[in-house]
Structure formats: C-alpha cells, structure tokens
Length: 267
Image 1 (tube, helix red, strand yellow):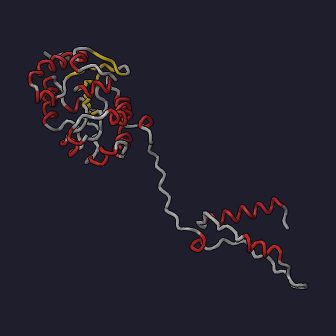
Image 2 (cartoon, rainbow, N blue to C red):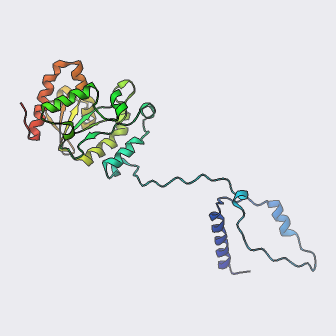
Image 3 (cartoon, rainbow, N blue to C red):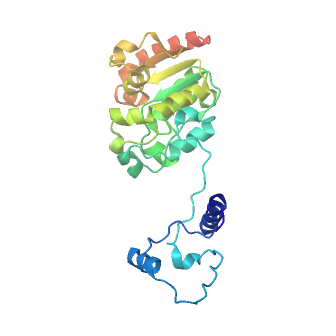
C-alpha cells in the first residue's frame, strides 16, 4: 500500500477528475454490502486480482443534470458603487424592489439632460407619458416646465431633469414612503455623479424627500436650502400650476431667486 500522503494525492486526483466530468455528488455506499465484502474471505489458493486503476464513471450515469452556470456580472449591485450614470441607469432598469411598480411599469424613467449641468430639476415621479417614452416631464406639465425654463433663458439641454421615483406609480398616485426609500440610493448616487451646484425641487414630494422634512412646500419656497453642500430652491410642481394658475406668480418669484443664485438674474 502506498504511503498515506500518496494515497491522499490519488484520492484528490480522483475527486478532481470526477468534478471535471461534471460529477458533483456520489451515492452513499450500501452498508450491508460493504460489511459482507469486508467479512468474506477468498477461497484458499485463489489469486487476488489486482485493483483496477481509478477511473471517472460516466457523468450521465452518476450525476444529476446541471444547469449552466450563470455568467458572472461585473456591474455593481449597490447604487453607491456605480461608477457612471450609464451603469447606474442599468441598475435602475433592473430594479424590482417595489413589487407593484415593477409589475405595472412600461419602463423605468432615469433622467435626461446635461450630465454635467450646474442645475438639476427634481420632480416626484413619472406619469403616463413619461412611462411610455422613458423621459421625464414630457406631458402637459413637462411642456409648461419647458416654457418656464425658456423664460429663464435656459433650454432643457442646459439642465438635468430627474424624479424621486424612477417608475410610474399606478394611477399617477403620490409615491409611498417605502417606494421613495427604495429609490433613494439611486437618487443620491445620480446627484453625486452629476455634481450640480443647484437643485430646484418641483413640488412638495420632491422637496420633502430630498430635504428629509415634513415642512409644507409653501413654507419651504422663498428660501435657499442645503443638500450635501448643494443649494436647493423649492417651488410648485408644474402639474399643480396647471390646476392652480394663480400660483404661477409665486413660482416665477422662486425662479427669479434661483436664477439670482445661479448668477443669471431675470426680471
């Protein structure tokens, strides 16, 4: 019998050959049969046949079928580790943290505009038009937002537009707190990558989520707030202005405040 070290080497090589052949399990020996073999003695004078060299049994006879291994993904699973907006957008597109939103959305709505913009405009969530096109603020509220920007001497391509939620809530309802919490990592990383100098929160949902406050939008507007060293101005959502045209004057005052902070004052 070979030394114990050599025996271990042979056993290891045998196990490696089995693994290479696709064998990932071996049947348990029949204890009764093993006992019989151990106690049986060969007939007197009978030659003991040499033990055959170990060979790997056919994989099809000894191993259960195996599923192909899934390809190893190099994309980070945590939003905070996403190195670019493109990778972050892929993570958003594959997100299923909110069962209802993932089941009812047509697609996720990531953001649009200048990825190096000084100014970001933050809304609450996509609507039906945004869910269909994959771009934020393209419906009636988006058209009004475009007009507000133009009045400030800005184009949509000059700014970056995004939402607190990346999926449309069914029926255009307000985001639930747990939904906003599930999306918060995406929002924070998105803003980290863009590195704007200013954020304009459009509506109460955006303002309360970004600033982590329960203060009413009427009290938040008219002042400059802070988010991680970024100046924040809050105003009414364009959809609110469509329902309440009288609030357009107050919104214009907020935009004038924002543009003064940007160093591009408007009358």
